[in-house]
Structure formats: structure tokens, C-alpha cells
Figure 1: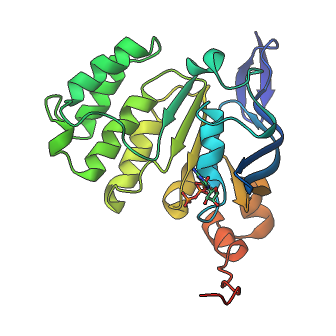
Figure 2: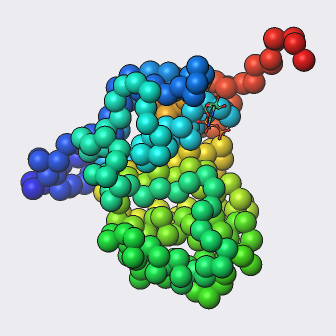
Length: 257
Ligand SMILES: Nc1ncnc2c1ncn2[C@@H]1O[C@H](COP(=O)(O)OP(=O)(O)OP(=O)(O)O)[C@@H](O)[C@H]1O
């Protein structure tokens, strides 16, 4: 390790670590004949919070599932830390699916046991502290929780792992607007800062203040990958404003309804 000056700060740099965590090369995924991802090329660094943004059906969930090893690419390459998603990457990736998969009878404390058993990198103490900060009782059962509380629970568990990559598919869609800021700051000040976080969301204005970079997906292609600072400086607008301009709805013109 050596110290390096970057701007105002000293940072520790390990020369042996590849600065690129995720590499995609000509990544394609088709469902039957229908393309969902259409030749993605991408390099993503470590320690970044990245917004994966795009209209409905643009391929966000498909990409996240490929990175989590739940789907196989039809063609091309996806690598995390040099490994194709699979056994090697399972322990490094913490995934929040777009749907909850826990059994209804489980309590918050059962879920902590479950995560402790499954993941060596799960920090139980951190999860307990975050549950408490968010007003969630350890004995509360999933069955009796509101939709937003279930989302909070799931997010706390996923972010309490010391993972290299966090894949969050629509993490705060059901949480009320007043609580979103609190949750985001609670979660993001507690996670492993060396890890990269990919957040797929439609709630851009709520989330953009925590993002370092954004990826715009359209029809299974990356139409922009940029830093949030650069977008603000070059375009003179917020990511939310830019998104609305780039993806202004185009009416269906097939005429066969
Ligand atoms: N299991 C499937 N079988 C067939 N087509 C699918 C399947 N899953 C997704 N698709 C199609 O693949 C494309 C990408 O879908 P995906 O769910 O990845 O998009 P998304 O960007 O996550 O959308 P949303 O914002 O609505 O969640 C869409 O055209 C969708 O209809």
C-alpha cells in the first residue's frame, strides 16, 4: 500500500488491486428472440455508488440478475473482479431483489440469524443498530410489517454485509418520501465504503444526491455512462432533469390495437 495525493485528500492505494470491479464486453441477453440487453460494454470502478437508470423494460433487472448469477448471458462477457458470476462471486455480491423472498413468519431477529448463517461477511451488530435507528423491533414479524418496513428490513440486511458489490433493484420504491432520505443516509453511511453499489431506480430525484455515477439504459443499450458531477457541469442540469429529457415518452405508433 502507498499513500497518494488526490485533490484535497490522501488515499491509500493498493497497487495489486485492479481498479475495475465490473467489466462487460458485448453483453447480450435475449428472451426467446426478444433482445433485453443488446451489446453492453462497460467498466465500473470500486467504491462507487452508481445509478442504473432507464425506462420500463430497458434491461435494468436483467443486467442485475446477470451480475448476480441468476441469469446467464446469451453472448458476451460479464466479469466481477475478474470472475464470471457464479460460485466465486456469490460471497462478494450482496443482492436486493425487486421482490421480497423471505417467509412471512420470520421476525427481524430470525432474518439476522439467517443472514449470519449464510454470509460470513454479515455484520449482525451493524444490522441491529440500523434496525433500531429505523424503529424496527427485533421481534416484529414480516407478516405484520407494512410494505415500506419490509423494504427497510431487506435493505438493512443486504447493506450489513461487507460485500464488494451491492446490487439493489428498486430498493426504496415502497418507502414514504419523508423516510427515503433518512434511510439512504443511514444505509450509505454504514456500508462497506470500498464496495461498489449499483442502484436501479425510477426515484432519481430522491437518490441522485448520493450517486457518483449514472448509467442510462435504453432498449438494452447504454446510452450514457457519466459522473453526476460531469452531468451537472456540462449539461447544467440535474440527473433527474436530464433523464426526463432523454427519455421523453414516445407514443406507440403500430396502430394495431
Ligand atoms: N422472463 C422474461 N421473458 C421474456 N421477456 C422478458 C422476461 N424478463 C424480462 N423480459 C423483457 O426484457 C426486457 C427488459 O426487461 P427488464 O425487466 O430487465 O427491464 P427493467 O428495465 O428492469 O424494467 P422495469 O423498470 O419495468 O422494472 C423487457 O422488454 C421485458 O419485457
